[in-house]
Length: 214
Image (cartoon, rainbow, N blue to C red):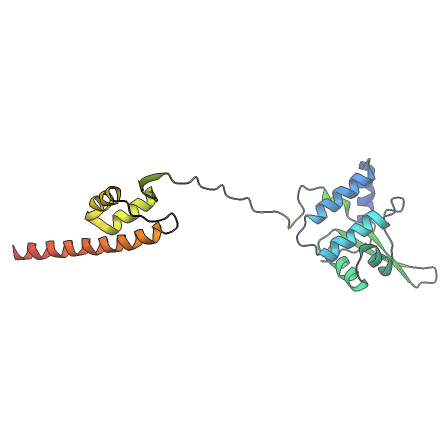
């Protein structure tokens, strides 16, 4: 929702905030740093904010009041981009805009009030980043043969596939390590596991048949 300065609330809040700040430049830098970290503010909004805070902000008056053309020139963009940038800043709660009029009652450049307290929190709303999960430590290698390196889970997976032939399967690998490279050993091992798994099935079928004959 856009933030408009329709009453004194925002201005009074900014005045109180100003009274607590000893160094205006520090306040400006903190504000822009926090605003820049908000991913929901558009690049147009960030350019406009930089111009308002560092070029046009009048400390004595407590607001900035450039026309759209001057603001576009300072921000290095177009008037239409300035308008979209202002909208982005309002929607994210970084800026309030108060319409202004001259002595004849005609529209004059708006008054722009940065909402300084918006930068007081450690991170602006919307900029929180999910904490990265700690990477799991690598599994130790439990079997080696030539370039083959198997972790405990990989070893167990092969045991499950070759069944009762697991011991002779791994014994054969160690006695006669295949000449597979570091890049190809996994593919070669997968083929060999399939062959031994078929052998295990044949042995099981033969055993079942002999048991029935007996």
